[in-house]
Structures are given as structure tokens and as C-alpha cells.
Image (tube, rainbow, N blue to C red):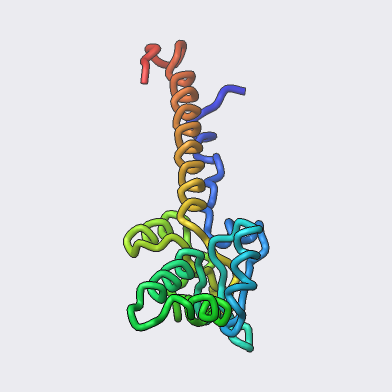
Length: 185
């Protein structure tokens, strides 16, 4: 059957992806404010997890812990001229998640589109953001990273390129003889 202009309008539009779609593919790591960094850090590194949500005793999001945040906190402490270097190991052993976490981080709802999320993260300079439920802003669902969003945006661009090529081919076919003058697009 030859495609017609009426059939082109019946191609279903694909709904945009959301950050909820991205995080739904994996388990979210969550920690508590009183967890010790010396126990958490090896677990983050072994599992290649650069960020985790920090929850209170009721399971509500309280913060965001990143490897970079831990390193910045350790570096700031080690550069403090009032702290003797011999105390550094004890401090590291006693360091808790609440010491290095971002308190009350800005969040993304799970129904926000990847384009809007990427734009927000770029404007604010965030590498990671916690994702919460659209129904409850304190219900932690996971973490989305800038690289994941970039990969999803790249997929969308490639899909648009393929779609444009397909539409051009269909229109060229429709404009070919006997209906048109064989015009090129």
C-alpha cells in the first residue's frame, strides 16, 4: 500500500522520556546520616556508585552524598591549620555521612522530562540530583546523573535524525511520478 499524507498523521507520537524512566532500571542506594563514611566509601567505590540519597529514620530524603563531597570534606579538614595531622586518622574513622552530605538538596520529580532535567542540572552546575516521587516530595526514588541524561538526549537526537530521514523518504516517494513532478526535498 502506498503511503498517503493522511497516513503520515497517524504515526503515533512517542511520549518524551522522564527521569523516572531512567532510574526505574536500577536499585537506588540510600544511607542514613549516622552511617560511618569509612564503611560506606568502599561500598560506593566497589559498586561504582558516585552518589547516594541520605534518608532519615522515617525514610524521607534528607541529603545527597557524593564521592566528591566526601573528598572535599576530607580536604577541607586536612587543610585546617588548627588540626594536627596526627588526628587525621581518628577524624576519618569517626566521620559520618551527615558531615559530608549536601543537606536538603534540590530534587527532581520522577515525571520531569529529561530535557528539562538536563537544563536544570546544567544551569545549577549539578552532577547528580536526587529523584523523588511526584506524589510525595520526600519519597526518595533514586539518583540521576548528568552523564545519564546526556546519553538519553543523544539517543533522542539520533531518533529524530532517523525519523526525519524516514519522513523525507516517504515525501519523496509521494512526490514522485505519476503524482508529482519528481521534486527532490
